[in-house]
Image 1 (cartoon, rainbow, N blue to C red):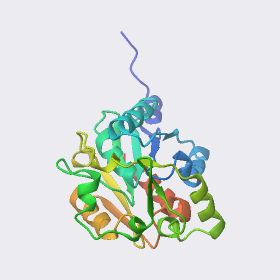
Image 2: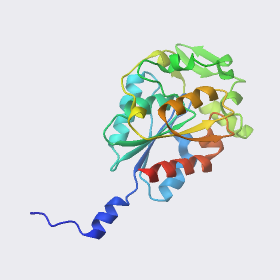
Image 3: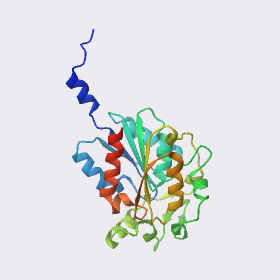
Image 4: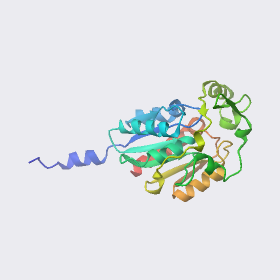
Length: 239
């Protein structure tokens, strides 16, 4: 018969930090979270960042699931933009204890990423998208509608390192609506010209999320990392 846990052992287990898994969206990779991930790692959090191909929704969700399964503890999933669609599906996994959406999509059962967006006015970025060989790129002159509150040199770096996405990605559907059963936080970017702020507000309201509004472009984890860090730590502590 195993010996009972001591009080100190139980207390140590209860105070362990959750693992944090970051999930990127279009035109970026996992490094877009570096300014938030680095201080979390320094504070002793186990941190992962899913790196997915933006080829198919099913494949991207599978990669998020593979990443979170590497985590040793309960997981806080943090999704940006299209990454919100991914954590909505992958977040039904039993290891996921909570969700943080950053200027993100969060489709309901009957919605796709595209159909959720079509319920709101089209944002300016979509006037500056190039289609090449079935992949979507931010065209020259369009990067300011994605990350316009970054310094010019950082905007140029985002333009130069962007990942392209399959044009069919937003019309694909996969089962799973994690925000219906998992506690959620939402960072609303009030100056977003990529995902409409009204979509963000609507998504946050219907999931019953704890909302933080920032005067930010679409990428607050890059332009206002300290504010995003505080939301992530608050969400982690609540678990």
